[in-house]
Length: 72
Image (cartoon, rainbow, N blue to C red):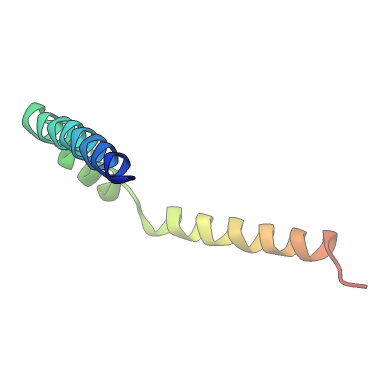
């Protein structure tokens, strides 16, 4: 009785899945995921000073949150 619902859902899922697969393969072929140089340049310029600054900012943020949200 409800076999047509299952068939319709199966057909729709295969159709949508094939569209997603086609879009993914097109993106691979056109170079959408080729961003290696940008990633490597970003890592190359991160130094110890930048990392220390990030750690200090996180500590300050945690201290401010402790001051503002003191448990009663």
